[in-house]
Image 1 (cartoon, rainbow, N blue to C red):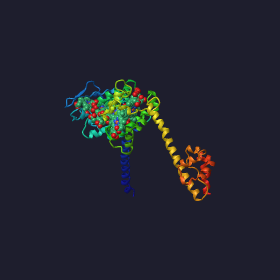
Image 2 (image 1 turned 180 degrees about the vertical axis):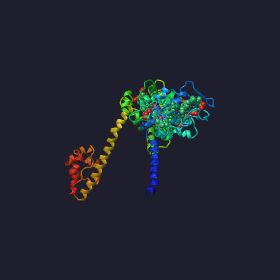
Image 3 (image 1 turned 90 degrees about the horizontal axis):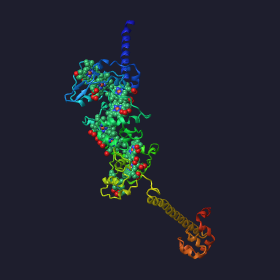
Length: 448
Ligand code: HEC
Ligand code: HEC
Ligand code: HEC
Ligand code: HEC
Ligand code: HEC
Ligand code: HEC
Ligand code: HEC
Ligand code: HEC
Ligand code: HEC
């Protein structure tokens, strides 16, 4: 019996060990970064063998393209950077000692692209986001200059990234971010540096102005030339420009979104965004008037669009026949007030009262007219009392004095109004004067 069990026991032990090992390695792979750091795996590694050569200054490697790759790694910098606890071979998996296996890279770009997936094992979230970005799309379409991780993060010198409570890059990172993007988007960077948003970022480290990543996203950068991006862009600007807390510091209006939405251009854009986000629109969004990376203060004496000639130029892009006074048709972001656009303000005000008064008056007139007609008919059908003069108009006041004229003027069926009836109406004078008060008691009578 016992001897028969032995192979089973051995098999069970082996099975446990194997599955245990598999589970362990699987876990190790899916370990989050913090666990990785906390676990013994992140003991400070001994990189001195590699560094014994690679800390030498001026160490270079010429590539077949003629470009020269610097091979010097500064150990002090490496020690302070985020990957200080990683051994060189974690990323340089093919290099164990010297001599190194031959590297087939033809040029500098070729070389960097060898590390395209190196980071993914430990930073799966960023890898996923980057995979969805316009950069990766462009790369897959054949643009080998579209960035991979190592283009934006030097793996040997990357310092810890300061973040806000929401996990976004803190304002202290903004300048560095702009410089990162600038390595490939230099022209945009220059425009941005001279804009109202960008100048604050470098000079004063202003935390309120947007960095490249506030408008484009960090890793999942979307294509800004799509209809969907364009249609949703007013919300992008509005995020800050309707925030009273931020804008009050600069004395800027927070009405810019609702005044935009209310105008003939914005209404369509907002409608499209809700119903059909991929619909192209030819109506202007914020940046058609203000610019994109070169936004200036509106009262900038040279480029500001509060100056009519400058604004006219923006209108003319879509309204080529526009002349000097054309921009006046756009009221700007200000809600009309006695100080700004007084004419529009008073016309609006006039209509605000005029329209309800006219419509309300009409409604009262029509309702009372219908009422008196019905009531009069019922009374007649019962052979009962006489109808009351129908006109609620001021003339009815005169009816007390000139009953004949009431008969002539009353808009009700004139045949029913005999002389006696109109005499009665004299007794009912107050009813004619203020019909609304008297309607209720009279109304209940016929129902009883
Ligand atoms: C004896 C000196 C020496 C040692 C030790 C050494 N390297 Fe190198 N390394 C070189 C030289 C020289 C080159 C230039 C290319 C070549 O000759 O292969 C180089 C090239 C490289 C390159 C760029 C080319 C490529 O193949 O990617 C990397 C990366 C690199 N070394 C990393 C390492 C790492 C990691 C270690 C430690 C495991 C290491 N090196 C150890 C001398 C050394
Ligand atoms: C987190 C991953 C990672 C670690 C850890 C790492 N490297 Fe690198 N290394 C890279 C990547 C990615 C590149 C390619 C960068 C590029 O093309 O600009 C690179 C490039 C290099 C190069 C080529 C020259 C250069 O700067 O492009 C050398 C030399 C090198 N590494 C040495 C080392 C040594 C020595 C260590 C350990 C002290 C080390 N690396 C640790 C990822 C890493
Ligand atoms: C186009 C440039 C760019 C590329 C490509 C890129 N990053 Fe980033 N990454 C940034 C910027 C910008 C930040 C924000 C903070 C900073 O750099 O100051 C950031 C932040 C991070 C952070 C901090 C946490 C976070 O999500 O904000 C990590 C980790 C990171 N990147 C890893 C990666 C990895 C891994 C890849 C490749 C899969 C990658 N990045 C590709 C630009 C880039
Ligand atoms: C073996 C795992 C590993 C690999 C591979 C790796 N990293 Fe890291 N990375 C780490 C650890 C651990 C940290 C430190 C995390 C922390 O401090 O929370 C880190 C931090 C970072 C940070 C700073 C994040 C922050 O919030 O401060 C960036 C950026 C980054 N890595 C980029 C890269 C890039 C780019 C590559 C590929 C070239 C790469 N990493 C490869 C483990 C790795
Ligand atoms: C390594 C170079 C590189 C870096 C760094 C880089 N980009 Fe790009 N980016 C490109 C290339 C190449 C394209 C393709 C279009 C072109 O050639 O301009 C592109 C395209 C874009 C596009 C889409 C434009 C289009 O044509 O559809 C946006 C948006 C963009 N980048 C934003 C950024 C931002 C924001 C950063 C910084 C976080 C950044 N890029 C960093 C190389 C880079
Ligand atoms: C205030 C928001 C905002 C900021 C900040 C911003 N962008 Fe843009 N960016 C946009 C908008 C909106 C578009 C789309 C413009 C269009 O369709 O004409 C755009 C377009 C782009 C494009 C593609 C079109 C082109 O002009 O080539 C790139 C690349 C780009 N931005 C890079 C950057 C970089 C790099 C920075 C930082 C230096 C930056 N952006 C800062 C809003 C912004
Ligand atoms: C991250 C927040 C933020 C975002 C997003 C943002 N802005 Fe701004 N914007 C500011 C701040 C803060 C100022 C004031 C800067 C200053 O005066 O130094 C400003 C200033 C301006 C000004 C100048 C006003 C004046 O006359 O002084 C205009 C115009 C403007 N933004 C338009 C836009 C447009 C259009 C967008 C969208 C494409 C946008 N902003 C996106 C924060 C933002
Ligand atoms: C991006 C293009 C674009 C810009 C810039 C633009 N508009 Fe328009 N605008 C339109 C379109 C499209 C219509 C709708 C035309 C239609 O329905 O016939 C329109 C309609 C109008 C109308 C309504 C009357 C009409 O002709 O239908 C006025 C008024 C107007 N715009 C004024 C302005 C002013 C003022 C500016 C400059 C501050 C301006 N627009 C800038 C595209 C633009
Ligand atoms: C049709 C062109 C046009 C559009 C579209 C437009 N603006 Fe303006 N904006 C102007 C003009 C002109 C001024 C200066 C005169 C004024 O304030 O009315 C201005 C002023 C501003 C100011 C300065 C306000 C202040 O208090 O001085 C900000 C901020 C601003 N706009 C942001 C936006 C945002 C955000 C959007 C999109 C939601 C937008 N604008 C859409 C033309 C436009």
